[in-house]
Length: 193
Image 1 (cartoon, helix red, strand yellow):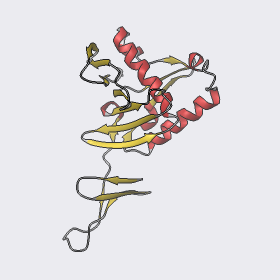
Image 2 (image 1 turned 90 degrees about the horizontal axis):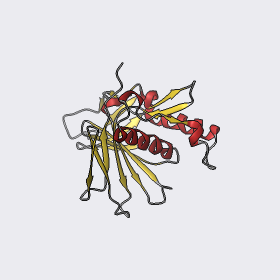
Image 3 (image 1 turned 135 degrees about the vertical axis):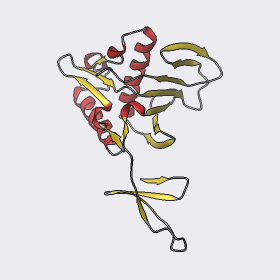
Image 4 (image 1 turned 60 degrees about the vertical axis):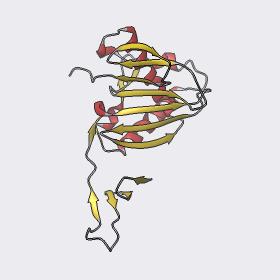
């Protein structure tokens, strides 16, 4: 995947991120270290089509934005993000935000236990390729109760540009109607350790 930054074009290789510098400048080709970011400092921005068949994802932190694109497994991520936001609005204790029983998800005729596990694997693999501390924890599991949830991070949901729907705007656990914005956002602090 090509990554562009404000200085020039950068290329992701197996051993890191490299930026090209032309021979005319005094700079030599140098490695640009990827500074790992904790999951709690991420912002996941979802763009969802009206029929919810197309879910795009962008991941940002500290002014850096990575457009991930649309993938089928992003729908599971979207569902878990919505559950986190819903629990925040309902006043559920922070430690319990976002848990979703897999049994309820498996009632969907398009979803099987195998498909869900494959989607979780793909999400974790996708995030492990980013400079994120503990990227595999983006999806948390409770094996005994068969529950999943999205790790604590900032979440932004917005309808696809073709939609003009109103939505909730969440900030610090409070909700207000916001007709001028068509995005839902929430800063959900990480669970207490």
